[in-house]
Image (cartoon, rainbow, N blue to C red):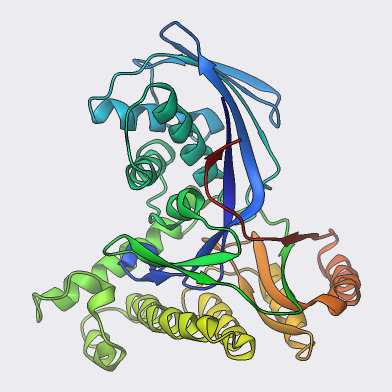
Length: 364
């Protein structure tokens, strides 16, 4: 069995998924491919082409950690916790999602492996079930308290469309992405973020602290999704400046994402791009998950206002890719300028990826 699991981009809506807000992701043509078959034993034998590494484990030998195979163990654990019978498989894994780029290679790994196991052992789990298993694997086996956006986008993606995902109801609508003459260009800072060891979990804790403070005066507040921008001044009196600043960004980003979805439906690339820039500087100055490399690339993008219509850091933060909306005819000129400036400043070369939107996890 061959399974294709795409990575994802997120057009806008950063750090809102674990706050029950809205996000606007899409599956892309960077993917992980799985060749999977029953091993007819109790052993899972997995070979990573990219890491040139073989790892075998049994279902009673699951452990957490930061290696690629720990994610697979987490997926097996998710099936076990649901009381679903399964035995070992032989699996070869390879792909072209750059690790640490913000395109969610870990979510593709979990989603694709779960999809394969679900099909082989006829477990009859839905795509939403598989997304939850992938999220659980990241929480329990990688130590990253991520939201569900990455797994959801990898599993539910649709060609030439983004998903406006409501992270509270876990429902979505497909919004066609139709910006004529404009493409999506990712510029990889080559700064590899490691979310579990970064401040990602601290940011989530800050959001939870803000919610708890609000709940003391309003029991109807269940997440930052329930906080209106007009009510932020109340929170400012209840928490530290740092917690308030983090919560303020998220509340504004939830609102910004909904406005951006409206512009996307109207094919208004100018206004959509303006909101992307807003998000980046919010991530940099207020949520504090950017880095000098990311800020430089977005600053350069702003120097090409006729060609680059929007740009921002994408993913959990601290590096990875900058997503651009750029006119087709400007890609070569812009890339040369960026490479020149980036090499002079940081003594390393960025990578460039043009991506197209594609369907979610599927059999080949």
